Image (tube, rainbow, N blue to C red):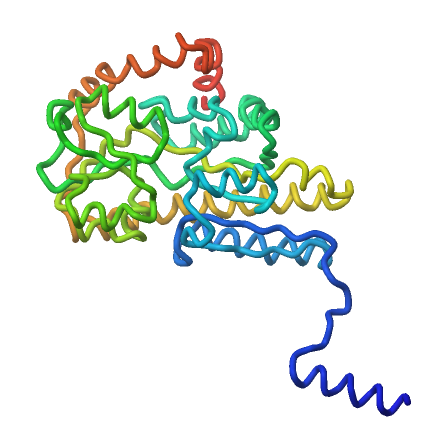
Length: 328
């Protein structure tokens, strides 16, 4: 009997049917819209390896890239429902509209200021507001560097150059309102469909950090790149709150630690890559900087965007001041 059992076990191993010594107690299914070559994806591979190791196999991680499971808003809904346990991306207003405070145009003038604010008590205040909608956020980073604008019509130097352009924007209200204030026609197109939309002329241009423009090859359908640097985006790690609350305390500690490390890894590599990506794009597109004088014109033109959110109560003027102070 023992010999027969041993023979069956050896056969099972040989054909790949052997069971692991210990199956994971928890599975973390993570989905995002970017390709495997992106920093976001690579940082989540770092997350997967570290979490599975430090949890001693009690948490397993599955990663689905390139919008395999749906668009960013769709995946955010899946995380809320619990069919997917985690995501990162641009649909952060589904968690809480207070995240828009980070995206007020020209709020920050350096990435150091942004990261300092996100990692401060103020940043925790913003992240914790998402719990009311079923999301837990263990860490928030930045989605690349400052956002720039590309188009296939002409260089952008002043607000007047933006007027009439069909600019693809993500479904982020502050971006839409910023380009409306500048006289453009914002067009919301899912991230995975932007390349073809630019190729087919559905949009004249788009806005993104240099890394996204490079990785997604948007430059192949564009001519001009203008360094508007008007906004930088938060990149929270969204987790289904009930899933997280179901972890024992020791695994919560591990999960939080690894999450912070993965987002820090993402920030370091994403921001370090921006200069290289911009150099790459300078060989593909006609690049122009915005003078200090013209930048002031842009700032004045978009100030109503700040006022809109303060007046409608999305956040208070005090919170805006706190966001600025937290970055100093």
